[in-house]
Length: 473
Image (cartoon, rainbow, N blue to C red; front, side, top):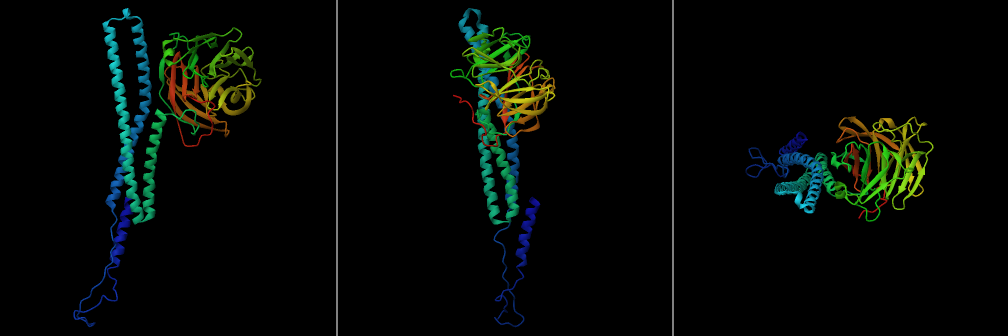
């Protein structure tokens, strides 16, 4: 690019010197004003008004390189902010719990315990101040980069007006790419701190965060490896912050606990504990809570069940084509997998007719029946788990003892399927429940008895295609 512009400058100079030898009609005269020999000759030279400012272009190119480097650094910082924020929130909640215990039982703590607590509070305060300064620093850098880019665009616009438009336009397009990178960085910053909950204005998941571990289950027992936890995907009024947990030593569904908020989940202070009637008990682990209703699998008869905790009504349905022969690779008896997303309730299963390949079914929540089905090409026993986001099935497989990978997706709107590669970490070796929740756009995993969740990043490049079926306060 620079060499081309040097050539342009040289060409301008050549044209200028080519005009020096041109004689005008009035340019030949002798010393006495006559036309005879022995006189002096004069000529008019027409030089360009300016030469190409190559130094300005070099400065612009150097500035662009600096901006690209700064953007890479800042985008790396943004990925760390989310994990830090969640970690700090966890620490604050746990400190609050400990302080309440001290207040309720002052005799059980001595001065050393109080001093330790003060030190921990000071440490959390210091961490929060550090994060605030980091975010403020990033905001300042973003503004500085925007000013630099504006100046670059101004310089290039002037060059475009004055000199060869084709060459300068190419240069300008390169720097517009840098500006788009800045906008993308700012978009990710906005998505991280102000996610667009309920929106499907994206083309899918592009990244999964590191595992965010809350704590061991409410039984405080690592033998309770089967079960699940999370939030209601369509909460009823006044229960928007409610969490639920159900854990077992085997793949059975016998009871479930509800907590008013995250703090009470950590405190193991449930406000409701439902024991399922013996004839209502289920199996498997991929159950969910939606609209205060438990959706789960039963084996007698083999089918689907729903238990409404508001009315305590129970219903069951049989899907004749569904097979009990095919389950996920890491979890037996997970023949039906319920999911909920921005567009409603889903269930996946496999059939004998499809030789174990997964079927996606949209569930009518009122009638509790299948509205529509989509046949995929993915073999269920080769999948460790799956979930739905904005009408798209995402299938997950185990890569190694610490890594899972989203490797396949099927879009029910377009009936297009594709292979992807989005790896993410596990906290423990095995897990029995993985579900997406549209109320906070997070993945919830029950990982060998631990509460684990993940933040998701989306590729926001399209207009919203699905209107949320719920409103969040």
